[in-house]
Image (cartoon, rainbow, N blue to C red):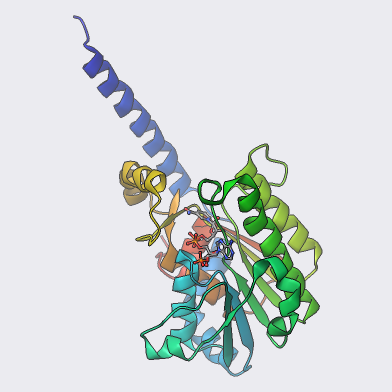
Length: 279
Ligand SMILES: NC(=O)c1ccc[n+]([C@@H]2O[C@H](COP(=O)([O-])OP(=O)(O)OC[C@H]3O[C@@H](n4cnc5c(N)ncnc54)[C@H](OP(=O)(O)O)[C@@H]3O)[C@@H](O)[C@H]2O)c1
């Protein structure tokens, strides 16, 4: 029997998708670090939020106009866990929701962030959801945003007394990687760790799921192709932006663990968020 090119391509694609699915399902079933602790954080989120609120702390958010940042701002506004939330960004957003309108927005020039040191003062907690892509900003632009702006934000936060810094990076962050993206993320994680915050929480999500405002055709195609995998193995290679935001808030209100630096990989993010049921 002779195979046609079409049949061979079909067999090849089926084999690749099956292999990917197999790996993803295996990943989905692999336990995360500290699973019990993660699920307990999710279960106690409501009571933790109530006791945290009594502390009357304040927080700032950078990158609040991005996909994760937007969800985080919604979580912060609805949970009302801080007495004050300051949003620091390069542009002002018109909110329709009354709860969001009460958040203070300050416009800063990230190239001259030192000049805005005063805006960082009096915030106990910092959230950083900044980021761009190489495609949008080029190599130097990517490094400037994902490394320089992020590090400068953390330095100013530390200098002005922030106690708990929450840093969003990415799966695979590794300062020794030969690839630009994971190397930049890993480098900034390492340099911010060296700042020695009382508490540093690093979130490393995999592919973010959301209806992205900005057009990113490559990312869109990849998500469509991987949709069977994200459906069948939901914690393996993806996470909705709303889940990341919930995890950041649930972790923030939880009493600190015994480590000053906490790293949450994709599956742990799902568990802490409360969106994943314990098996
Ligand atoms: N895409 C993924 O699947 C994925 C997966 C894992 C991790 N991550 C990482 O997760 C983080 C958040 O991702 P996201 O998709 O929520 O990001 P996003 O939607 O692209 O938003 C990025 C934020 O950074 C700000 N920003 C970008 N360039 C800037 C500049 N030159 N000056 C000042 N602000 C600037 C944006 O402000 P404007 O709104 O004003 O542009 C926005 O607030 C990023 O660090 C990303 O690398 C992404």
